[in-house]
Length: 83
Image (tube, rainbow, N blue to C red; front, side):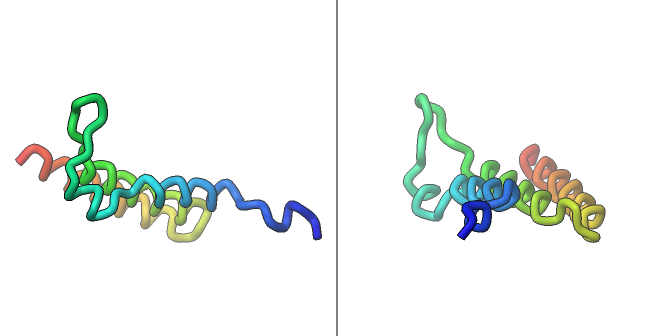
């Protein structure tokens, strides 16, 4: 069988990278630190999920609709960060 048949597309590779970077509940409860600074798991999760939505919708008929959802979600997340 040709090797190309078993290779992941760039879209699949990006989604796998994103899924690995989304923190688990256990990670969030432990209070992880990087160089003495607490890791903002919520912000990382929000951005990862929006990025996944962008990748999944890229090149589809729903790309414009998803872009609007992403923009609105980012506005909401930014609003609650300032509260």
